[in-house]
Length: 206
Image (cartoon, rainbow, N blue to C red; front, side, top):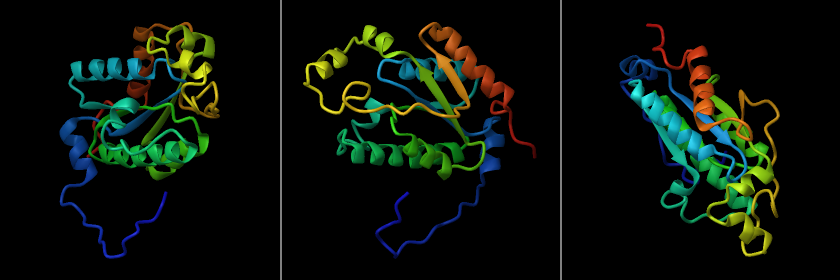
């Protein structure tokens, strides 16, 4: 992570700490980082899991790749450098959500392992859950409702992950979701079960 360009800044501590927020919400903040090829099901799983958690009375929020590029990261393209900066910024935002006690889902291709590892390093232990949404290139192309893969294969979209740009699979993700075979409902159940098992849906000890 880059150092600030300005030296005339001071960190200000809050009078409310993270455990206070988490006890208020009755849950533990965490970043649930969904990574995988375009069309693998990341956004679909994220928004469905958010709905399932909110229906259970849990505060959850989705940071989606396309949505973030409409605002915060609207000045970034898809070069390797811009992709890395895109993920760096999202990592910082996700950290703030996590410290506020929110169950935050991030839905980004995030193709480079080093970038995902850098976000993990930014977080406290247990605050980063990497989920590999595993779907074959054939499966993803079959779901290509936007026609992106077709355009990429025709050379109309440069540096498209899986076609003309690389995707580096996670080596030790906390969870792997196989959307080649699994339904959205099954995938969401797998995510929620993991969060239950690890205690994220319970308040921290006083």
